[in-house]
Length: 184
Image 1 (spheres, rainbow, N blue to C red):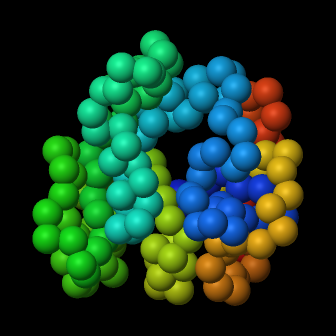
Image 2 (cartoon, rainbow, N blue to C red):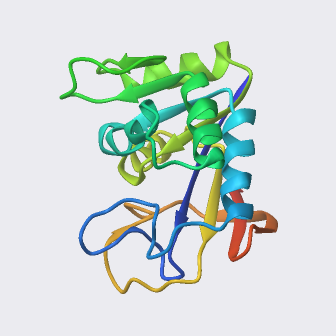
């Protein structure tokens, strides 16, 4: 059975995007090599990723190699491209390689995905996560805090959440902390 997990890096004050609307990264500084290595390994271990339109468009950056990338960036891009991606959008007409456009019935699609796919399905995008939370479909929340305070921007939680229960804490990379929660 699939496990739906919403996780994103964020500032200490809970924002995943700064005041100019940029989604993570960079949150004012690119991740160090240990944190970036964590994300490479994390993406490799996923069963797939479910994106909202905006986050998918941000992540399309990894679709094509760039000459300025270092070895780790090429490795992340390779891992990202290898994973199946599902994109929930009412406005996109097509998506890139190894991606499937999700139709209007997001709830039915995600319920089917959870029963047909084994492993972790990563959710990216606060608005998509809010919709799935409202439907009771998110199994776990991973909050990755980096040592920045943005003051305002796009919050990790787009709307009020049901009560959550802490199930894990980890230091990740050079400067991040991961908190894992499940619905209480």
